Length: 582
Image (cartoon, rainbow, N blue to C red; front, side, top):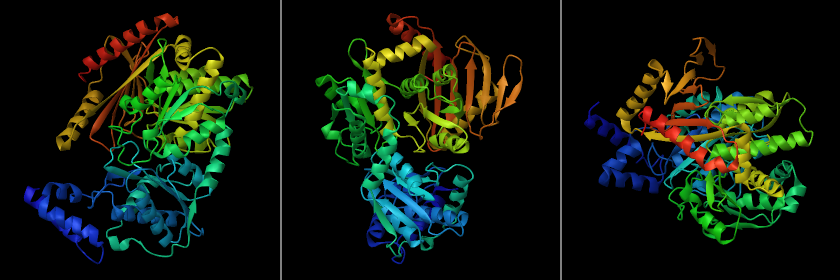
């Protein structure tokens, strides 16, 4: 296809948006400006349709078919509404819950979404103020809705917004619904197919009543109220990073019994421009810098930071020198799971039918902890919807205790069906209170876990390969790993290879294969004899390939921590060098 042909196609698509019959005056004005003045932006805005993927929409805001705007949101909503109507024939009224975060235009897009659903006859519950993703997930089940939508782009830069679609269990869409909804959205060929207007009488505003019901469930997760009472002055600093967490996290901490909670004032103001951070991502240390400074000034012991839609949480704790250090998602998940399983056992709550879930790229330390307490454990594909799928499948048969993923998402209890940073913040604080009541910090507790189960150290490398050639390079990397799998990596013998694309697990010792009973996914994993695990996973939504490294060592006493930590870091770096990923 020639450049001229591409330009003519883009121009034709853009000219269609100049129709006064279908598009508002401001949209037409912006499109005309791009046509006359900015061919590069025009091309990026119109060269394709913004893809409705298995999780929904996510993209840069602006005019055009490849942008988040009133019209692309409307078409996505019409497709989702059509699918819900087809799969729930004879049910009336159909119900939907809609929430949104602090991003620019999130409320505007939420209102558009509500109006389209209402025009299609849905009883529509729209939050009157921004609320976190986990509260939307809870509201879907609490209000007995058939679907739900969260307007958020998680931790993406300020230029982005997104649209997450949910099923009636409060979880994001899984097969076959995800692909079927995509087909329905693709069937919306014209903006005239979208019912933008109709009666708004069936749009109901919700808020505080949902909060109250949510907090009642959240308080039921507390395991040691008396310990919290004895440590109620535990110094906590919290930052919502300009996001929705400010509406729920501080109140949840107070309801749990914590009395010494400070908020970062500059970051407690909801703002879709995220003015105080380069990226509102709690995985990045720079996002926690202001909170750490406030914690140092006020002798705090725990730093908590949530992303804009408050489904993920990052933490910092004091090390043996009193300096704040960041914990990664694997470490926080391990602390939470250890504390919760120990309390369930000590309190006689284990009945033999409990289970926990983690994703395949999350630390094997969680598996070891579950084994100690004789808890059934499940691995699932990356993405919290797969954790929710296992919860739903076993509902009424087994009791879900908790689960998590290395990307800072955790869920304790099953009244929410997506990762929940609100309850995670409260339970992390409770874990810290319990540790302190035993004369320890969270850092001490983490080292105790390493001494008992082995020192697990993880690292993630994300490699971006842009454009068509980049996508081909990523495919070639995966092809080479499959066709020429290493026998050893950095001196460690490869004993097992899991290929989730072909759904096989190959024992490299006896050359036997067993099936992997999980959905297909383009993921490869190499397990070494020394306990190391290397995972390769191309992103399904971005031009990236991610490599996850997990190594294991032995630590006998706390004084050996720094030494063993450095040894394991050297081991990770050796693996990275040998795989030519530097």
